[in-house]
Amino acid sequence: MHNYKDFEVNIISEERIETEHLILRKARPEDTKAIWKNVWSDEEVAKYMLWIPTKTEEEANDRMERTIFYQGKIPAFFTCLKDTDEPIGFAGIKEVEEGVYEDCGACFMRTCQRKGYGKEMIAALTTLAFEKFHAKAVRFGCFEENIPSKSLIESMGFTFLNKVPEVREKDGYEYIALNYIMYNPDHDKNNLT
Image 1 (tube, rainbow, N blue to C red):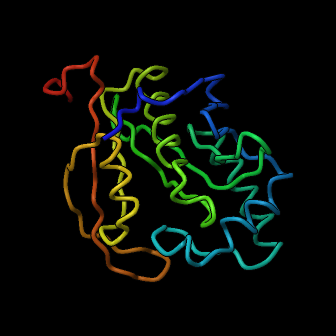
Image 2: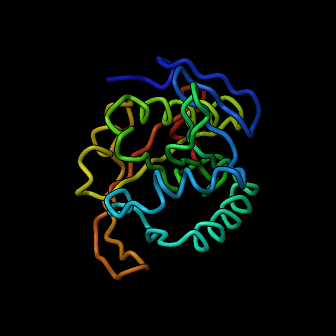
């Protein structure tokens, strides 16, 4: 089992975080073709996500505009390879109650899965929440049948919180969401309000 503190995380600013292999940074218009090709158009990547694949360049351009706006409001990022700055995924957190942050979706292109990047991404977001925002707790979730994501979250030391039946809006798919939590070691977990 890993701990988020086991990973090299450098918070450059609230808009840029670096790990050993990744840069988490805000989306830019020039990223459109790469993120569309690498992630947004891939039906297999979208399988356990709440969004639908982007089919056309026009849809990708529209989605990029929405993404830039969305990322401007919360700590959400494109995950990019440090060596090339190529966007290979996205990830973010949002405050859902005072001092409690929750992931707002995270994924990687298929060829970049199972390479340890997910651990670096979770470490980066957890470090940001605890050290920059002084969060009391961080929560990550996944579809129950998404075994790799479930294993990743558990391997990072998150504790199972609950199962919640959900319906995906885009297609009415019924699934069970598994939710996990990690308490900030500098806060009293019994004093969460």
